[in-house]
Structures are given as structure tokens and as C-alpha cells.
Image (cartoon, rainbow, N blue to C red; front, top):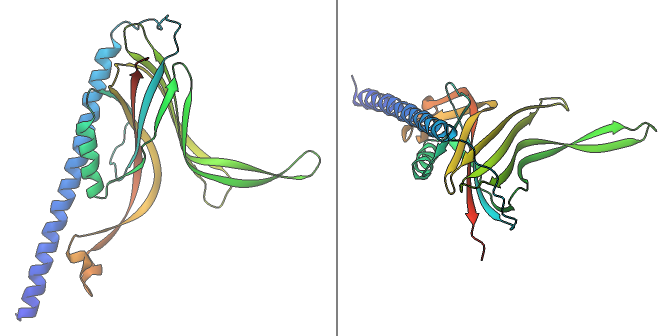
Length: 249
């Protein structure tokens, strides 16, 4: 066997090894995300067993800082609706950074807002689609359909120091070749200790085709295209909501 063929065979062997190592690493990261959500789910259940305190009767106006993190996780094998409570978000943010490096997630938004206690806050990420209709007088009317991601949060301070938050997350997309909109939503209410985070997932995203390539060898000229792979994946949206009371001065 010539040296050229031996070199090509060795390169092919290395590429296959790198590919399987990469896929194993990606699968391990996704399993770690599932385990983290399961731990948060048990934590939320434990706090949920406590009796719900009454709304803080004090008449003073309180402000609450809300931090939101919206992430789209790609190639989730079996996304399941889940909500959990995280005392510290460092592990999740580190995991999200790893998933980003593996091209398995994208951070869509990280809004931070200050809300008056009991008021509603809303954030929207998406587009508006113009739709032409006809009025009762047969006049053309243009209205806009929103599609994308919308999150609404309403916090309420409780007498025991926790913050009761009501969250509604809507994920919608435009139907191909049509003016219709298909959507999915989830409503969650939980009493969250001040500074801890409510995390929930399970809202499916769009199915899309993604191109994967083996690192290093996938960038080689001539033969690099041999190590490109196309796969149809379905994404899942993950939301993180962290309320913090603003001390009155």
C-alpha cells in the first residue's frame, strides 16, 4: 500500500475517532442538563410542600429585579416538560457555555428588568408578519401577527420573604407558505426564595436541518466535505427566571 493511501487511511481513522468522541461529549452534556433539571425539580417540590404564605400586607411600594435567560437547546433527544428551582445558577451557566462550544445551544436573550411588586413585565423576541385583510366596508386593512418568543412575568412578595412569580412563556412560528401561526405555551406559578432561580423547559422549537462537521478534518480542502453531516433536529426552549427584592432606601 502506498504512503499516500496509508496517510489517507490514518486520517480517516483519526476523523472517525474524533467524530465519535465529539458525539459522546455532546450526549454527556445533554445528560448533564437533564440531571440538573431533575435536581431542580426535586428542589421545587420540596419548597412547594411548604404552606404558601400570604401576600405581604405592607402598603409600601416594592421593586423587584428580574433576570431572565432564554436559551434554545438543539438536538434534544426526548424533551420533557419540567420546572425546577436552582439555589445557584453557576452550574447551569457553565453548562450552557459548554453546550455553546459544542454548537448545541444558542442564548437568545438575557433581559433584566425592574418591576413594581404585583405588576406585569413582558419581553418579546421575534418578528411581526404583515397580513392583509378586508374590513366590513371592503377596505384593505393591514395588521401584524407576532411570532417568536414571548415571556410574561408577574412577581408578588410574600410575608415569609419568598417571591411568588407567575410566568407565561409562548413560543410561536409561522407556517410555511401560509399566514397562519402555530404556537405552544406554558403557565407556571411558584414561590421562589429571594435570589434563587426558577428554571423550566419542555417547549419544543422548530424542526430544522443542521450541518455538522468533524473538527479539524472537516475544514481540510478537497476531502473536508467527506466529514460533513446533515441531520434534522428539533430544539427545545429553556427559560431561567431569577427574582431579587430591591431594598427600599
